[in-house]
Length: 189
Image (cartoon, rainbow, N blue to C red; front, side, top):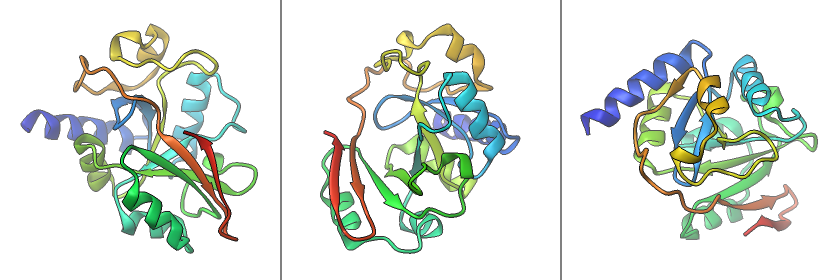
């Protein structure tokens, strides 16, 4: 357990200085930063060679963080979170208190509540949501294991978390879009 706490501390020190990290999530390896820091978010877009119009998701560690970002959360969002057996990203309307370059053109943001210990503890320490985007150059395949991550990505981040390097990832999360008028649309199963 101490290893996890050391890694949380190291990652936190990098993130609070505006850095970006490469870290294991509940799905695939991710590139992340403080979701309230637009300069750090811009570094990730640049590293991934991704247009800022292609939004990234944000990880959260619970209800309090969700309400800090979304004033109105439809009841169906909580039902989906409670009933999901696998990691599920929910896209909600009208986010606030996050970097503007994370919010998509239709004023929505994809979020996922994580229970994965490293991510959860890191956000507990940050007291902020964490950006999460797959550890690849835009358009390239999503790596399913640390060994599949390109050297360009590894060299391009400020810190690589030293946990779960041998783990083979599951699939990327399911993505469901919820609109404020309660429409539900599955974007990725």
